[in-house]
Length: 195
Figure (spheres, rainbow, N blue to C red):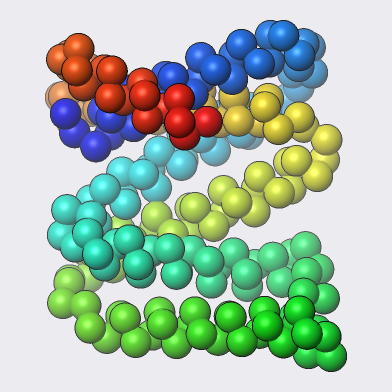
């Protein structure tokens, strides 16, 4: 079972759980045009997943550490300006000083770790693409949730996009979804715990 096939199976479980929650909370009545952006965004997020899995094939530890740090730095920098979150970095407060120190420690770790990697440009491109899309996904989630879209409805529509994007990727690679019962069970269990 490929990593993307596993992701699709776990997304099916998450989709099912969210569908039940949305049905019983009647959030399906709140459907609006902005959710179409989330659907498209879910498809784009599947590109980030594919890029991440591609980077993991070359260096698991590098993708895990470097991708996470890079994504966090991008999120902080964009939120700093876009959402006016500079107050979290106010050097006159203890919280601000702690956040500034954390940010610089993250930058230092990112810089020092990047010097120890022995991977090529393709890997760096894949992990950077994945980190950028993940950062944009976090920022988009914050924006859409601030505008009043219920969280479960947001996740539901995003899951649909992830499923569509994942199917396109798997079918495009000629893999299909013919998996063993054991693989389906493992993937569904992962999805239940992920939601």
